[in-house]
Amino acid sequence: MEAVRSPNAERHEEDRDQIFQPLSFRSGLRVKNRLFRSSISGTFDEYNGHGTHARLNWEESFARGGIGAIISSFVPVTVRGRILPRYATIDDDDKIPFWREVGRRVHAHDCRFLLQLSHSGRQQDVGGVENLYRVARSSTSKKDYFHGILSQAMSRGEIGQIVQLFADGAERAQKAGLDGVELHGANGYLLTQFLSSGINDRVDEYGGGVEGRARFVLEIVRAIRKRVGSGFHLQMKINAVDHNSWLYPWEKAGNRLEETLKICTILEDDGAGVDAFHVSSGSTFPHPRNPPGDFPVGEAPLWYDVMLSSGVRTGLNQRIFKNRFLASLFRKFWLWRRGKVIEGINAEYARDIRNHVNVPVVCTGGFQHAHVIADVIRRGWCDGVTIARPLIANRDLPKILEQANGPEPSKECTYCNKCLLNDLENPLGCYELSRYDGATFEERYANMMRSVMSVFEPPAFGPKAESGPEPAAAEIAEKGRAR
Image (cartoon, rainbow, N blue to C red; front, side, top):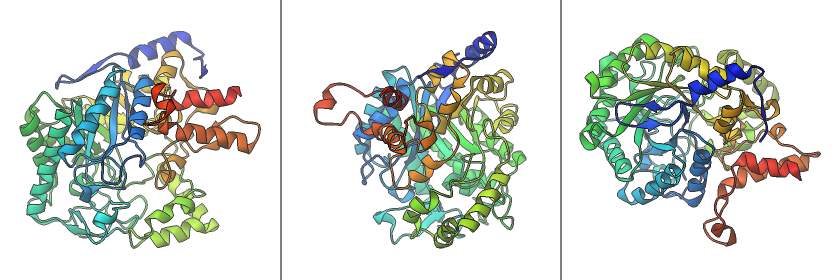
């Protein structure tokens, strides 16, 4: 794929040197460059939580594209904690062989793989049949404010069980030969629900002040360390600021930066805790700051309907999305709350956290240009960046950044967020039609489908299975243009 050359070759060489230097952690983990794929994946897997051939193709495609490390998608430690069916889990030893194969495929490209240990709590988009008659567990009995998903506060006994499930998951990841784990403590999932002052309303030792709200996560960190030791990488994804009242001003604001800095100190645990922090923001998913970009109201009515039975507000949301006037107002409000900055939206938060902690910091937020990535690293605001949607758009983005400042303008990620709404029912991929070449709508659409469906190539069985992996999505799209 042809990339745009930097107007200043000398400056780009300096940027490239910043980006493509190794990053080492005290755990012993060493990543070949400063580029991490953030936690993304589609509903590619078996309903029972086993991984599939499509997932193997998916993960390997990013490793082949030159990314230094991959953070897996949301991986539930129990079926009670999944966000969608057909996401691979780590809830039993029988999942270890699959994750071992993922690691093998990724390691073949000198790429590291971190498993994201996760639990939905009350933010359970589609729980599946196993959770049909079960109320989601959380720090609180209040429903989530965006979808209205009902929840029940966990007992002390349930908290202890979840702590051990996270430790079990970390131990399985280690046995699978993976390079480490990440705790998902951002964007509204269970760990956020305990950490956030805007959500956690407990009056026992797991609520109240910062120390009480952080107790649950600290117990998880210590339980994991007891199982896997200090030589297995453990990092924490965390909201720098919750912005819990940004969509609905009557909600509590949630954690401020000062509270998050205290939480980070607690989770460092005098040098025996986490090895790195992964900085995000926004107390729910979706949120104007996560993923930062547009709210595709035209796509929402098509795919949001899968959630209608999940929460008591989903019907209202769908009526808003279907009403052209109300949808337009909602989108304008969403964009106003997001603000003008997309690429590097969390960079200043990462700077403040990095200045406070004693471990490396990586930052998420729409990165896709070398000068932006290199600048935040050069200034010492973070040690690396994590990338999701721009890598869906261009899985060979690291190779592009070695040669140029970024993709050619017509091939950049537009931050439209159509990929994330489609993921509710369709394979995850780039659904922005304007990025695909073709003289007619039909040609552009055909090229888009070739790219989206490339995750299923090669198949597990059949003639193509013997010929090796297909090119990355960007290469497939390029072939389509050549025709």
